[in-house]
Image 1 (cartoon, rainbow, N blue to C red):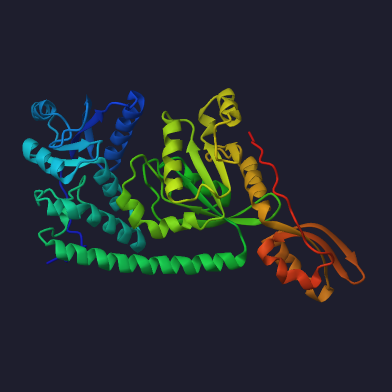
Image 2 (tube, one colour):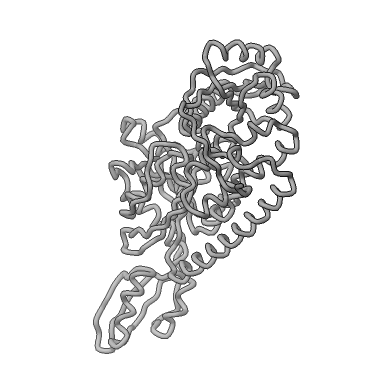
Length: 445
């Protein structure tokens, strides 16, 4: 008999067939809703189902019982016979009551956008850490639905066989809460381990750059291009759930650490933000945030805004920020130049057009990162005795060597080092260190 938290797989031989439904409410522009419906199609297909149709209903307000109108529910019953779909997917978030009522009225599984995203996360969670965080999010989402009396045979049954619907869900709420507490304890252990890793990185004095952005914007491809890493790359949503950290070298020889993070999306479930706090702390503790934006796709501005909303919730928009306008190779040069020169990329200090696939613009991006990392450097004039010459290699790793001169007493160096590291070299300092002024941000093509 499986415990709660263990998956029981019962694969189906046929691909699940889904129909999508959304709502056009007063005050919403039609284009963003259309973009969301196209995105929902991509989400459902990423989760493994076939989409046979979609519709958007104009509503004055959501129906408390079904979210959608009673007439639309009757129409969906008729369409089921024509299209043969077995699952209805709502772009609007459904309350437990609305979801239960729709399932009873249509006699089929009904999911909302949040459950599809949770389902994709369950499919892509490869590490123990990722599975812990996904299961916690799933159970937080499940608990009010179990309390609401939703049909147990449909509870949590995402697309296919990955959701907690395949777990033994005939357990009571007390056992679910107990499992959530167990998960929270395990996730706290993950957080402590990550804090130790970050402390070790801090001791290396290498700046940490968190790579963020909308799902499938090319973050992992850009990480690989800048570092020579082999992070998983796939043309699908949420291919990366677990952070990957690799070192990259800037033009002046200094190194930075780049950390690839989970992608964002419009209507990102709050359960996921809460459960993935251990992972998202990699972002909140970073020195610089690099936002990767796919400029080749429709809805670019909505994706830019959606990512910034999450960054604002995580209180990271006050960090040094650089915007990487990715996939420039898919647009005409004139369009790319116009996007770089536009003045409304606030609050980003640098905006650089790049192609992670072809390596266009990567030197400019490294230059932008170099300028942002210089704000924490101090200038030192050092005289290293010849028996301490080995410190020069450490200085090159932690900062940069601007000039070198061999004199009778030793090696005279002009260096820039992180301010918090400057005390380690004070015994070799000639004049008092002078803090460097932060350079004026420039936009690079």
